[in-house]
Image (tube, rainbow, N blue to C red; front, top):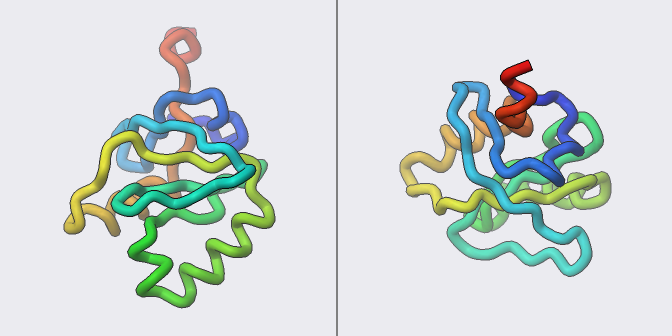
Length: 111
C-alpha cells in the first residue's frame, strides 16, 4: 500500500501506482526546476499529488498548464520517473501515478 504522505517522496526511491506497479523515481530540486522532454514528472504537495505529466501535456492541454502552474506554487517535492514512458502508455501511467504514493520501504513492509 502506498504511503499517503506525498511529502515523504523526498526520500523514496520508488513510487507505487494505484495498480500496484512500482516506478523508479528521482527527486528534483524545487529551485531552478526544468522539465526535460520525454520524461514524466510528479509534483506533490504535503498530502497529495498536485500534477503529473510531461512537456507534451503542457503544450497540448490548457487545463494541464493551469494545474501545473498552481502545483508549482504549492509544491513540496518534484519527482521525475527514472524510466522514460512510451507515448502509448503515458496517459495510463499518469492516472496510475496520480492515485499512488511513495512506496513503503522493504523494512516497513516487513513490519
